Image (tube, rainbow, N blue to C red; front, side, top):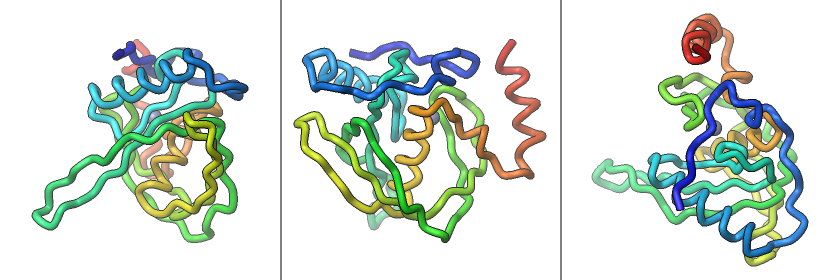
Length: 171
Ligand code: ZN
């Protein structure tokens, strides 16, 4: 079921989300709702706080460029209680958007790869290394679980322009 999005200025986006202790039917429903809401809004990732739930869960999907240049989105994945570690020293700066701050795309510098350990909805433990687009999406969504937004991490040249836009956004 699609749920309504929480937007910039909503205090839930600034909270640290709580650990999920047990996979209950409510948790499964939350995952399904996150996926539905992400798809409706054409997102590549969505975290529970963005639909008003302060729990450590997000969903994401991969983006693949086909030989003809068409970009297609892959199957959604559910991530529970993620722990990110060992970021690469190498970083890059890429434009990011966020469903909670529509219309504002900013350059964010992040490591190009990172280690992630998380639980699945089936209560399996996944431990793997993510690179490129997937690393970036997971870092962006994981930030949401800690009350951090991409506009907190923007490169200095974008800062003035974003401050003006955010000021308008709050009105
Ligand atoms: Zn976001």
